[in-house]
Length: 189
Image (cartoon, rainbow, N blue to C red; front, side):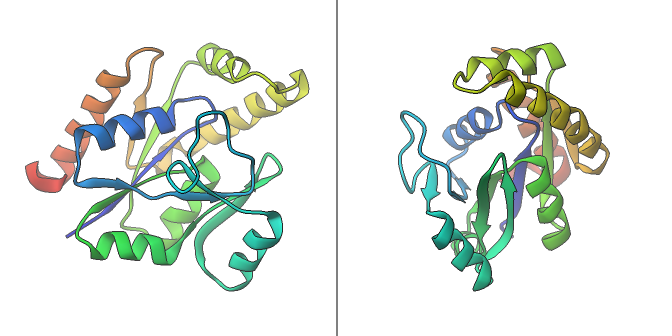
């Protein structure tokens, strides 16, 4: 039976990088493409990395009940469409979704059978990663660091918590695979 797997964690922890590596290694696992109102970052491909919408379009999706989870994060909407998830699971693929901690809380409520993996890192590493993204103010950096401290409290509700140290993506992916294998058996992905 296809399952929903969720990668979550604070800003800068490497959620997307880990997810992309998982998908590369396990072709049966398909990434659910998140909807957002933020502008594409350099190198992001619309409808591959994210579905990009205006605020008005996103709010219409909310009003029509098309999203099984959504939130406003750092002044932008993010969310995932129910139909897209259901279609992916119905096709026989396991689904992988990448969301912030706020989104993971909602997913755990809406889809309690989802397996949530929370990535963490040392606070100094996280701060360096956040600062490394550039184009954010010192005030924004401090706000994200405070939110990170709060988000780390979600670890007790996650199904698995793993540290994602800088430069150790392959090791993190191996740990995720081992966690999923022990929870679901060899054939889960």
